[in-house]
Length: 236
Image (cartoon, rainbow, N blue to C red; front, side, top):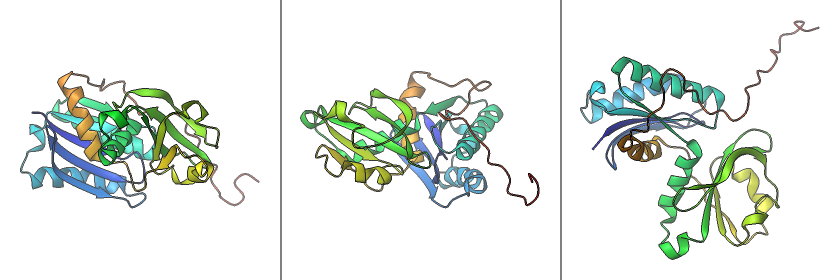
């Protein structure tokens, strides 16, 4: 069974986990803003120390690839790539939205008859009224593409025959739009987590589905636009 180090920094949550097969051996998490760069490396050292596994004994590093926070993704991916270069280990990119969908599925625990009729719709806050989202079935197969969208009450009209579950840090601002939709349900308190990154990375490891270390980049989805510095007189 593969020993995988998982890193999640795509939102305000910073978390690190280490797993062997389906078992999470150790986990660290913080939901404080702007702490990723200060916490991710100590968390890696802590989870390895907790289970008494030397960092060079891991089999791969898995990291949340996005979409998500531009800065958070840069921190997580650059940390993962640095470890892989130094340790000569493979890198595994995990779709952030799929990882969120995996977490929702663990909470719902549908049987096959119910699962066939449900859809999972993770939503990450993309600022203003936009969310990053996609649609997955209960087998975590993507049936609606990843995109940035402004959600309104007509957004999922094409799926009215299905039960749709929305969740993630962007779902709260969409719930008012769906108050009259009986087939759309909000699952609260589902956040990004390195536990999901580790679990989804296990199958990729078995398939040798590794990411190119030299040329891989986070999946930002939207271009980064830097704001103008607010220095008095600079642009007068």
